[in-house]
Length: 350
Image 1: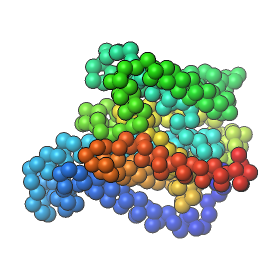
Image 2: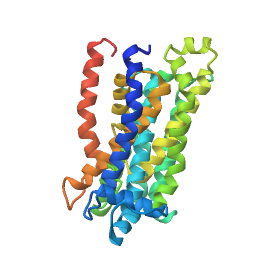
Image 3: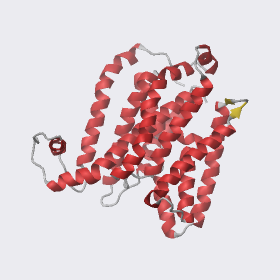
Image 4: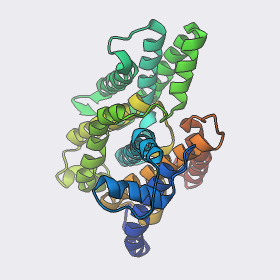
């Protein structure tokens, strides 16, 4: 893994980063809100928000533009930003826990468990929770998967990280097989729903889904930075962290629980969106260094910007059709993963 010692170049880059990353996020939000079938210029976007606050608008805008912004664009863009921040922070946490830049929330099978639960719900016709049945199934699937991995990784009352990693790989394969079986048994209409879910999309974002997912996504994003000092200590190895007074076993439980909440809630409302948790933390680590006090907030900002822009690309590059966002993030993330894999292998760390 990249060295965890803070360097002078990284320290010099923190100040511009504190300006660049928030500006990138704000610019992404305004661009994404204003782009679509109904065009809204950046000044009109700002004017609509100023009007909502009871202030004078900068330029004139139409009522239709304000209605589209409030009812369609804003919940979708906000959900994308929250999802991106949560996925990036969870990715940084997993890489810190495993002390490996190749770790990713999907590695533990959390996303696969959610996908299996959704496929089962669709094929078996379980609709106890009405419109939210798929979301509830995805969240329950992710939590059950996490609990199973916890139990399998227990060793004399302690969590064995390597056993957790291997269990996650096995659970991934098992859930993939189950999802494949449900896909085989599905009708054409059911197959369309399962496929759409597996590829990921923010197209179903509404204020209701945003309100359901926001508390769980924010828990991960807001609480993980409070563990930054413990993550820094963990980078010295478990034995070294214990010598510094860090309750390592309790820390592992807290980290995985927060990751399960964040990723599970995200998958529940938008399907499987991969590679954000892998690429963003590594880019931030290369730019600003491995200090988790900086890594977590910077990853949240860049992850939010990346997913908002990826969703913008997904809904505009093939108008009037919409490309699943999972395809866009995979096109970006997969080559980066191969580069990372090759670099790690050449460094003799794999």
